[in-house]
Length: 594
Ligand code: ADP
Ligand code: MG
Image (tube, rainbow, N blue to C red; front, side, top):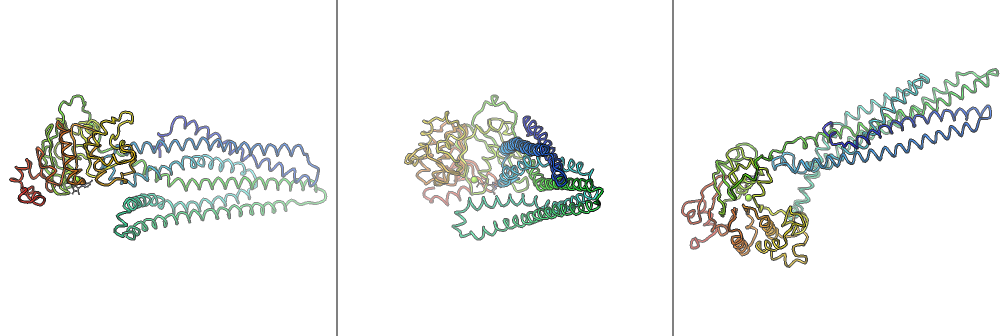
């Protein structure tokens, strides 16, 4: 937990310090109240024998009321300070987590899983906030109250003190057992929450497919299993913790009974006869007053122990959550900036891969093997090959979404690992295989990451035209039309075209289209490519495609198979030389067309 302490602001330390003072004051005032009760009881019993002094009664009653009111005000101010402190702390931790996760590479995210990262930034942070608001107050109040209260009663009758001690012992034993039972369960519950979130996310995002395949039952079973697991664990912890409260009440009532019982015995021991009538009555009255005061103190001590128990309920969860948060914060991102000065780079639009091999899991299963490829400025390079042969992986490596272990990738004459990540990635304009749209407007999505005031409207219209986004003109608000999360209110082909327009808007020296044309019909595919060719004359263009027609005219065609390059050449060369290319071509074109 000490690692999270550094996120407490200086001003919050001041708030905490004031709160500690106020809590101690509160305890002092609350323990002061029984003293006035004692006085008042003495007055009350003395009226049995003499007429009592009313102004004294008013004075004591007034002071008692003043204590109660001051204690309440101190409590309110403490709550105010502590809530400010805990809310700010949780905000800071959430912030740090979010910033950290943004620096994670795909591999780092995969290690934690997306759902777990979400639970950690939400649910786990709430646990910490709860502890900071409730736990901190209890942690100060409970021990102060317990120790101070015990000091107050230790001077009174030994038999009463013993009774209180026994009551405390019973409570401590009960709580210890409860904590031992619950502790491992809390850890499990937090882990299961991760799985529950993951499963819920999958079910909700995939709901259409699930319905289409009538797989509701199948998915339900998976969800139910985790849900039941969580419920079972929650049930054990709640039931165990639930037992504590009745035990508490029983012990409290038992203690009151014991104190009064012992009190009656003591009172009985004071013999009343005619000579000492007055004296004995006063003595008895005093014992009744002490008994009432003692009961108040004892109840407060028991309350202190109840507070301690609440700490024991919150603390284990907090420790589990803290660990999970620290795991994220302590992770060193596996892909970090190099220290190349970008101004020193003179070349443009050049990529070179030398003996590159790459495996997603750092094992023997290579997604790419021995890749050698040179892409020159202004060239249009096409990559073709069956699905799963490593085409997307190849371009992902150029942009350093993953680091390679064998070989070297140079962009504009420098190793990709030497660049600052922003400097490297600004050189590429990538249209991903799966079009990814974000909540906002079409315009926001095209000028992604550009400030509203810096958006070039003419350029937006221009790229919409090049990407054949005619459908936008038919929308009521044109390019200002709304896009739902994930672009779910557009068709696959429309999303793909908006994503192409976005790539064109970024207008970097190297343009990559990862299988972006396959979602388009033949005619649109042809039109878009024609317009792109006219507009991107001096750019380096990398096109990944499935259709021979899409790439036939490229300067260089790379044929890939099973993670390696089979051949590189022009359409005509490859038709003669590459068996793999011939097969692809034959499956798509007739003999005559070839
Ligand atoms: P292509 O784009 O040619 O269809 P990919 O480059 O996407 O192929 O995938 C190449 C191989 O790498 C496939 O066998 C695929 O299973 C694997 N692969 C792709 N992405 C990942 C990933 N994020 N984690 C693990 N394996 C992956
Ligand atoms: Mg792919």
